[in-house]
Image (cartoon, rainbow, N blue to C red; front, side):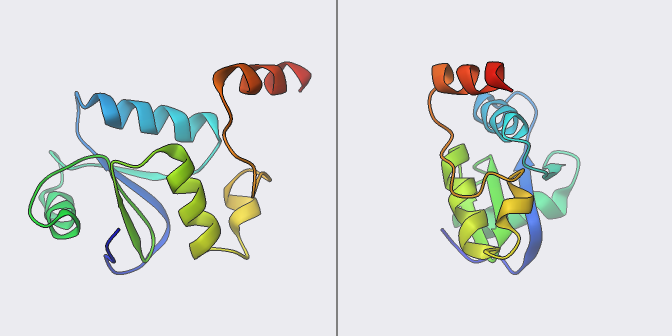
Length: 115
């Protein structure tokens, strides 16, 4: 994890065709975590931010949360960064679920069915 300035929220830097990007973006959507998504192939300045955070590579997804840069994180890593960087806003940013872990697919499905 590297510092990359300050982002007021969650930014996901990604590129088309990246299966890790698709997985993370889908997981964040399922958790109802609002993000700003930036395609590094369309925004050269975003690609440069990724290279700065990774030490020269364009490894995606790279996620910026507050002052933290996460390289190819899991959804749980993003949740933990939100809770650490935005303790007063975490509950709101996590859809009222601060402190809740994502769980496995079965437990999420059961929770969804219960409403």
